[in-house]
Amino acid sequence: MSGVGLVAAQRAHFAAPLALRSGAVVPAFDLVYETYGRLNAARSNAILVCHALSGNHHVAGHYADDAHNLGWWDNIVGPGRPLDTERFFVVGVNNLGGFHGSTGPVSPNPATGKPWGADFPLVTVDDWVQAQARLADLLGIDSWAAVIGGSLGGMQALQWAINLPERVRHSLVIAAAPKLTAQNIAFNDVARQAIITDPDFHGGHYYEHGVRPLRGLRLARMLGHITYLSDDQMAEKFGRVLKSGAFTFGYDVEFEIESYLRYQGDKFAGVFDANTYLLMTKALDYFDPAHHFAGDLAAALAPARAKFLIVSFTTDWRFAPARSREIVNALLKNKQEVSYAEIDCNFGHDSFLMDDAQYHALVRAYLERVVL
Image (cartoon, rainbow, N blue to C red):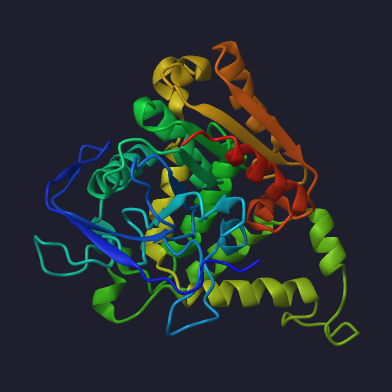
């Protein structure tokens, strides 16, 4: 089964200011996006894919100049795949504050002509929904057939259903949570401190110094990556295997797991922006739809008209199944329509990215019943 093949990114400019939850205003902004499949005459077959912390608009396919750069969710998008591009018009967008073309810290600040850097305002999931809605308007999409995402992307799918209930018919919330636990906030803060205390950070204005806080970003990614994997997966893949077959009695790489984490950290630090990483983790921390409802998640979800599919994974300890069940229980309390699946998959939090047969069959079966 082939994927969507050759794709190209597009850019949308929005001249009207965007007021953010923080009270700050972005005077104008760009969003970079990709589309797969065709929008039908009724404009009723569009699916929005929301990306997670380190994701972007490149959801599927590859570019003409890089056939190996497959989209981060290529295994689920394409003809005959769960997000079937012969039936749906799929849209992926790089969020405001991102590092892959949308307006963010690396973009010029119109007030100074220099990169925004640390002056780029903090953004929330609410802000992303507001910006994505402007893109939907531009594309002529009044109502999404579905909004779908994993992890931070799943939180956006949930927020869409709350904020703009008339514009979402189905919300697919995968490997997500209604808010972060104290432990998750702690992980994020350690990651941020690794970046902020890097001597090359320069208060977030490192662009002007011709450097990047690579050491801090590398450590932040290494820490994050540990939380994305399950203990069983690490044991199965690496165990306590020594690279040289013997102890070297030093601090260089000895265990295979150390080699893997350092490789992942180096790779990520080479292609991502530290300020964007800070913004994304804070958006995760702030996400809590029930905050303005005295902690009552059911009250927060009450406006939603969408039908929901909530999916969790047994080995995901960062956003454990119990967190997904909180969402399910709140929806049931409201007598809203919800389906729930807990998938036995060994890849921890990263399971939502994997080509797992049961998981993909579930998403396919759900979306096949979506009326266009």
